[in-house]
Length: 225
Image (cartoon, rainbow, N blue to C red; front, side, top):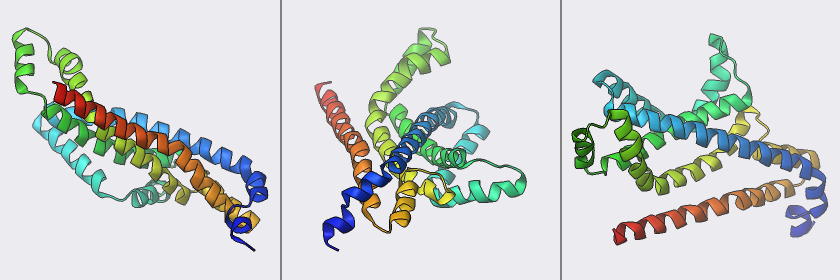
C-alpha cells in the first residue's frame, strides 16, 4: 500500500465520516461547557482569593494550587473511576467536564488575579470615596479593566483546554479522538486519525489566530494609552 491509500484513504474517511462528525460535535460541546463553566467559576474563585476573609482566601489558594498542579489525566481517572466507590457516579461527559473545568477554573483564577492586581489601587479607593458599594466597584470598575488585561492569556488557556478535551477518551467519552480511534480499529486503516487531526486544526487554528490578534490589539491599546 502506498502513502495515500494508507494515511489519506478517501474511501475510508467517507465511510467513517458520520462517526467523526459526531465526535467533533461532542468535542465542541465539551470544550464549550468547560470554558464557560470553568471561566465563571475561575472569576468567582479569584474574587474569593483576593477579597474574602482570610480562611476563605486560604481555601481558594489551596484550590488553585491543587488543580494547577494535578495532571488532567489523573483527575479524570479519579473522578470517573474512583468516585463511584463513595457513591458518586457521573457519566463520561459530566466527568470530563468536571475534571477539565476544575483545572481551567484554577488557571482562570490566576489570570484574573494578575489582571485585577494590575489595576491601580487608587481607582478602588476613589470608588469607595464616592460612596460606591463593594459589589458595584467590582462589577463596574474592577472587572471591566481586568477583563481587558486578562483576555489574551485567558483565551490562550481556553485553546489549551480545548486541545486537552482529547483526554476524555480515557473515560470512554465519544469525543473526536475516541471516535477516530474506534474508526481506525474498524477499518484497520489510520486515515480516520489523520482526518480527525485535520478537523482539530479546522476548529482550533482560528482560535489560535484569535489569541494572536487579541495580544496584538491589547498591546497596541496599552501603548496608545
